[in-house]
Amino acid sequence: MLELVLTVCSVLQGAACRDLDTIPLGNASMITCVFASQVEGAKWIADHPNFYIQRATCQPADRVAKN
Image (cartoon, rainbow, N blue to C red; front, side, top):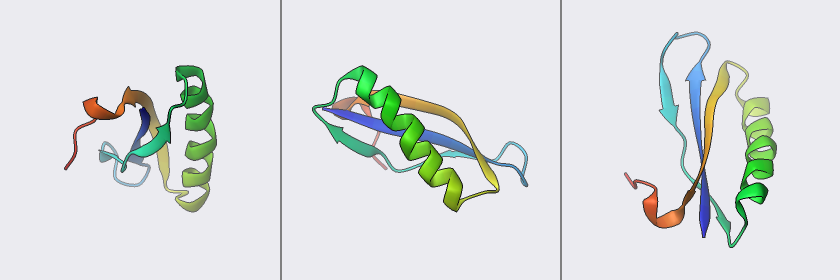
């Protein structure tokens, strides 16, 4: 099971970056996760124009740190 983690940064606040909540992808392959990062990232940015995506990470669900 993979999860997608997007790290976003504020355009207005300089280096203020944070990880978003993980997006579960089920039994997707790594290539599917890469495509999902583009789709999910575009959706998120459309609703948050003052941010940019610094990094998109595809990781096994058990390796993602939970807060």
